[in-house]
Each structure stands twice: as structure tokens, then as C-alpha cells.
Length: 424
Image 1 (cartoon, one colour):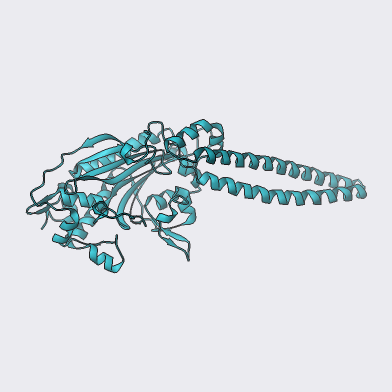
Image 2: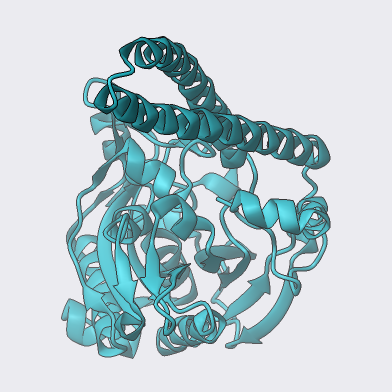
């Protein structure tokens, strides 16, 4: 969430940022927000004056009673009663205006970093890096959903029977490979200095608002109405909320966490090959990295995270590319996002496997996540997160790119984790 003072003092910068995001009602939204803030400040000023006057009268009444001037004191007491009634009404009006302002602020997305390119859709994203050799597959090579059936390692129909579409059942070597990837990712992250945590798979409403899933993505999350809890769409939500309402010290930075969780999303509205098999699921496994950083060091940290994901994909021998997301494709809470995509040779398309983002102070403002700087003043921290990595499309890429007539060859880095070299 943007700070209203920042919007007030940098209106043109904010409007340019919202224009880069192609937000059609940006000017109207900022105008309403600034008007609500102006009204809030005017009401607060009036209320402060009433309270100051009431406090002064209370002191005067005490002095008058001491000096025996009871009649004058009683007159002033009547006036304080009126002031208290006025103050109560004004306090209610102020609270309503604060709520109105807060709801408007929740609707304003983060301002993109200056290097974020303009653009409307994913077609306008910029490819900034590409590495790896796209393999030439043998005749009769199959997409991963057919390979899964051929080798009996993932059962989509059984998952559909148990729950519904988008909830696969991993079997045999498929389940072992899934577990191997999770352990491999976690080990890579902890070796890089990320502390592993296990977090709840359900979060409360405050946590959803804290990281920006609410109210922006409310319809995409599974919601338990009875207890008002949400199944997490990513470990980013509970891990980052570990630091909600926390005041850090400057020497606490950097804070680096990693977590494995199942993730749950109600998306997947389209049909066809692009959402077949593992391409889009309602439940999937993901390993996440989260950083809490000093504002002066967050972009260096972002580069570190990008290089970390690059190293993992290189070890898996998967051809990949990195995209700098344009203003029209960047997430609501992000200031800058790099997407990683692996090439699926059997599908002849790129599959997104990771997003690495810097949110600057946007989440921290919602979370009230601050630190004391060297001057003892309170500042908002910067938050970052990245997939390291999301499993479904990594697994899809591995199955398709590593297939041979003899079976699916396991990348060297994963063999110690899964205990076999070939799926056949």
C-alpha cells in the first residue's frame, strides 16, 4: 500500500506510474484519495482544537472551584458537556473518513520501478537473458501429460475423481521425483543462507491484506467462511506475515527465509493444451524465498535472488529465459518483477516457473514492518520474494526435455535426491 503522504507529495510520479500500469481510473482514484485525505486532516484539526479547548476548560473549572466561584464553574461544565458531545460525533466522522481513505488506498497498486517497460500485456515483456540449449527430441516425443500416463507417474483422472480437475495424484517415481525436487530446492536455498521455516497453510484476513492478496485476489483464493481463513496461494503470505507489526533493528538485515508449502489457487478458467496436465493446477507444490531488506540494499538483494534461481535452473540443465515484466503485466503489489520461463520442447512453448519481485515499501506499509535507522527514526523496510522454484512446470519441463526412447533421464543434480537415474 502506498503511503498517502507519498501520494500527496509525489502526485505526478504516482500518476505516471499508474499510467505505465494502464490503470484506466488512476487519475480519478488518486483524486478521490487526496480529497479523502484532505477531509480527514481537516476533521482531525477541528477535533484536536475541540479537545484542546475542552482540556483548557477542565483546568479552568478546577481553578474556579478552588477559588469558590462555583457558579462560573457550573457554566463552564455545561460547555464542556457540549464539547464532549461534539467531539464524540466528530470522532465517529473521523473514523468513517479514515476507513474510506484506507479502502481507497487498498485499490491503488504499487508504482513500477523506472526500469519497468511500458506495455499492456505479456507480449510487451522484455527478454533480458537466455541460457541453455533446447534439445532435439526423438521422433514420437510426447507432452508431459502423455508421458505421465505412459510411465504411470502422475494420474490426472484419479485426482479428478477424488477432488476435481487441477488436483493430480503423483505415483511411484513421479512422487519420488516431486519429493526430490522439494528437498533439492530447499537445500539449495539453505546453502545460500536462507533459513528454512514451516508455516501454516491457512492464513487469516489480516495476513491476506498484509501481503496484498486481499482485496486484489480475493476471488482466486479458497476461503473457509466459517472461520474466515484462506488457503495460501504461496508461502510468501505466511512467511512475510511473520514480520507483521514488527520493528527491526538496522543490523537485523538481511532477513532471509525459505519455505516449502502446497499452494492453492482457484484460477484455471481457460481450456486447451496451455492448461493441460501440470501447466495450470489448483493445488501445487512450491518452494519460496523471502527477504526483508534495508531500502538501500533491496535491489542488490533482488539481483542476488535472480542469480540464485539462474544457478538452480542451470544445474537442472533446463533451457530458460528471464523476462522483465512490463507495466501492464506486473503484479499489483510489485515494483519490479523478473519472470523465469523454461522451454518445453514437446509443447514448443515457454512455461513460467518463477517470479522474483521487489515490493519496496508496498507490503511493509500494510504490514507495519519497520526498522529503526541509524538516527533512531522509524522507517519502512523493503520486502522481496521469489519462487525457488514452483514444481509443476519444472516437472513438466524435466519430463518433456529429458525424454529419450529408453525413458526419462534424471538430471545429475537430482539423482542423489531421488535415488534413480531413469524413469521407464
